[in-house]
Amino acid sequence: MACVTPVRRLDGRDVTTLEGLPGPDRSAWAGALVSSGGSQCGFCTPGIVMRLAALEGPVSDDRLDQSLLAHLCRCTGWQTIREAAHAVLDATAAPRPGARDLDAAAARAALEGGVPQRVGPDVVLGDAGFADDDAPAAALVAVPDGDGDYAVADTVAAARTAAGKVQGRSTTVPLGHPVALPAGDWALTLATTWVEPAYVEPDASWCIPGGEPASPYRNGGAFGGKRHSPVVDDARRLADELDRPVRVLWSREDVVRRSPKRPPVGAGIAADGTGVLRVGISGGPVDDDRWAAVVRSVGAVAPGLTLEQVPVDGPPVSFDLRAAVWAEAAVLAAAVRLAPEGRSGDRVPVVGIPVEVVGPGGGRAVVCCGPDGALDIEVAAGPVLDAVVLRSYAIGAAHQALGWVGSEGIAVDPDGQVQDLTVRSFGILQARAMPAVTVRCGDGEGSTPVNGSDAVFAAVAAARWLADGLAPSWPTDRSGAGRR
View 1 (tube, rainbow, N blue to C red):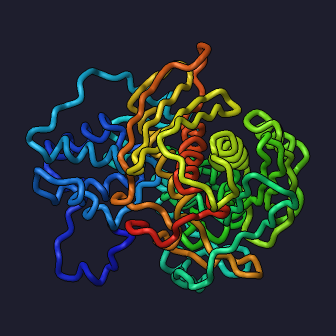
View 2: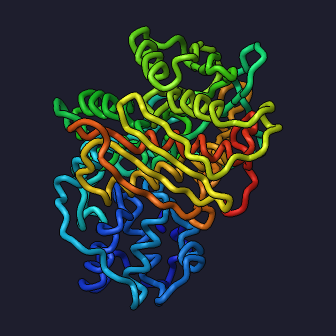
């Protein structure tokens, strides 16, 4: 809640943090959120707990969703948070049975998130350890300035003043689709826009002179958005140059301006599965080896598609983001198999039909989208290891996929500068807009566990697109109620 509450509103008031809750209440919330999978990286969870702890049960889903309007959990898709709230606030809520192996849960979380991740009550309570948590108290603070470097001072406030930080705003600039569709007589076409990965913990690192910088990950994968974050090298460089420990801290606006986005695409596919997928690339051509890996991943899910790089003006892009490019290919391939006759945007919505996606790594998902938008998901990813974590990641992937198709996007001006700089401007689905999701976790082929939530992400996107009538550009419903 601290990120949406100006300090002036607290004048003369008492503030209770998570540490101020009675011990039994803290334990109840921690246990419920671990049991439901309602906390993954844990960065947003303490604020959510405090918001929910102020309620008196029993509570309705509508009341819970209303209380969560000021919050964002990008990981879990809200449903598991609701379940935890009911477990604590409703006298009739039944506890979840069975002890869990939290080491196995952490192993499943690492597969789904791409980096090591802890699972347990300490994560819910904010003690997972984040990038800036253990920085030396006397460290200098470095924040990005307007010239592509950093302003450095003794405190965050002084560094931001020196940098001339201006609070980010939303914009009236419309969303654009920067990649032109390929020429051809296609059964389906799709154009996507710039999408912000919107991980909640901003990039941060710290380093002592001659030391190793702190990882910006710590307990969450940021959907691949921090894989090559420059804060690590920046912290090392500044510490060595200034011969002092240095904390490098990005604000939300810095993340949106500087971090990589999902590459926009323009694609066409024929009824036989052949087609062209054009990928927007800013900042020069992609390294040959990296592009070859993208081509292989697309070939694994949609072998009839040919890839093309298209230079565009805009923020940096990354293929490390969740299922980037191959998910778009999988969506097109699945949709063209199941779509009725007609062209993009003129088709009858398709609901209740299983949509299957098998990812390049072997994870498999089958998704049905019902007439009311409810999702039925079957995910197979090798040995389950921990069904709670796999289910939580599947629901989180569904939430992200629904937003990707329906509402998410950021405005970029003709010079390639991002204009939407607040979390509320990204189009992320709020809790009240999230449909019911049922998940069944099964063992996939083989004895090796693999990532399953990326296949869920692609399959949900395909199922939602079919249910929306295959509109030729995303997002399909930017103005929908209940969206951030």
